[in-house]
Length: 464
Image (cartoon, rainbow, N blue to C red; front, side):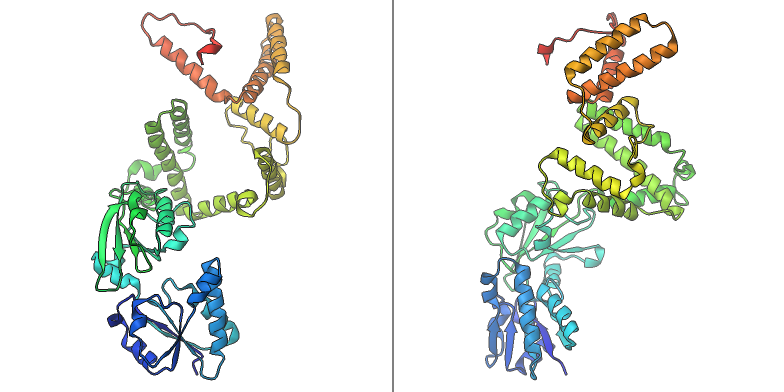
């Protein structure tokens, strides 16, 4: 015996109701509708007693609460001797959270559920757009997409977005999509899906929420970007470079031979940052990403780990170490965030609970010094004042004037550089970048014909 029968009413027009669905409804005495806001409802058999859950949408603040309440009531009705027939727009398993809730509750209660399938909005949209879903079509719920800050989409594949039922949802979806797609990327709005009045309109993405006629029969088609742009495509390129028939140079590399290239690309990114060159930064970040892809591909080939596992690890770490973002923990300021980070990190890796624990000692010395100073401050060690540091620097300079031995000079110079690094840190200056820029300027002066190269130049504070 069937306790609950779930009927799909199709995408819109009554002519798209399946034969099985029509026969089921004609043989019934009553039907419970998730909503009466669907074109097929007006064409249901006239003898049917209709019940609707439309009133729940006004009583609850969140859709999820509505769907859970619908499921609770349907499962309760399904325990009657005559069972219950529940009808939903489209296909019962496409974009129907209430059905998913019903299936879970019915399983717990030991109730038998019969599914009467129907055409979904997908088939009707495919016909309107003249596209084949096997070309990699991604199907996404607009209400889920609207809650994200970045879309869970591959920009090299087309996407169909359903449940775009209002301008408000369209506005939120637009903002999410624009974190991946250009503002002028052409998208297609498909209105009145599943009805004879179906129409499509192409517009730039940034104008998506300007349309007034957006309702429950509206969906959105997003074509792929015109040129390959996804991480998955880039990963495939990395795999092809190392595959048989790929690049002989790339096939010869391993983790160790790529070390210097990883370092060089990192420094080129830093140079683009120092020069505030956005065009160069875009290119150099790509070069650095290639190194990451190659290292990951080498690991994949040897069975060590995959890119998905790399991402899994860092995603879990970021979520775990940001409870103030993902777990509702309240923090007063950025300093408290850093203290929490260190506490969580110590709990995860007790072996790093040392002065230099977890800090790569191979990093540039000025950067290492500032990192150590920052950690000491987070641990509660009071930093010397700028006045104290300046006095210390003067004392070290005086000491240097009297030193003759190389070993003693190295020790004093090390302390002097450490004090300068701390002064830079307190002034908000990255010491490594500051020295790099000064060196580059020195090189530029050397390359200028007829210029007089000075080792030091007085800086007019007012010039900044």
